[in-house]
Image (cartoon, rainbow, N blue to C red):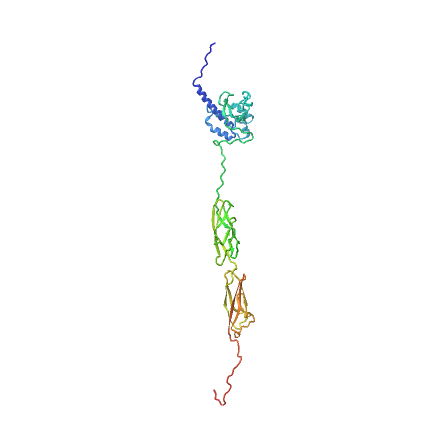
Length: 411
């Protein structure tokens, strides 16, 4: 029996088929990428990135996406029910996925081929849905999505790695319009101290001893308590110290403080924070006066009085020379002639009932002592001069001669 030779395919058919197959593969890959997208934002990005595939002919991604799929034509999922409609998510989604992508239909798709391990191949199982496609190393979309014969698998590299139930999906590269999480902001740089103050007015008594507290430095710094270290750039000639950790200023050992010679002293404090930033400021320390000086002199103004002056008559006024300011003084008299006088305030007066008789002596002498509020005293000898007054009548008549010759002439 003679046989007619088989008709050879047209020479131009092979290149056209190859181009079509290549496009079908790419379309299937993009459709699967859309169906496996985890969020509405990802699906929207995929569609926007593939707008050049249009809706007809070679630009068929819009038609290939199952109608009603979240993110597909006329749909924008906003609820779990919308997501469930995605092929492979829920009963309706599974059915849509089988029909629109050719992943298999229970009535039209042959039973899945057994794998070497005896399990069904998820790439061809119509009931596998989206999860089956995600688990396969090389997923298969049927050519139905690209216009090929239904049931014919097209190997496509998996666009999304398999995710175990309950685990978060792996992070995917951000596509157009996808918000990216901002990287954590770096902490602000360490700022330098801006000022220093003393916790109280910087004063110290001139009589203060070693270690006596003067003041404590407080630091203003934008970083708050920033591990400060304190030092004295100028310690007023060794008169003060500062605690490096607390900023407490104290009187240095052996320091001599004298209000009378230096009523104030200057120091310079430097603070360094944990980052090495420094701030320097000078402070004035007031040296408070204390009654530490002994009266150096007694000034007597007056000191002369007429004899026979009555009690209470002012003999002299007194003042005292003392280096301490604001002092108060008391005076006292002692000695042989002290009983003739009294001190009232800063005045020496004739004592009540005293008899000052020039004829008995023209001067009176006694010891005058001044004492300040701190008990410091000074004693000087004071002499009061008496002036004579005509205070006595004739006490006798002295007759010299008393003898004359008789018959003496007159005159």
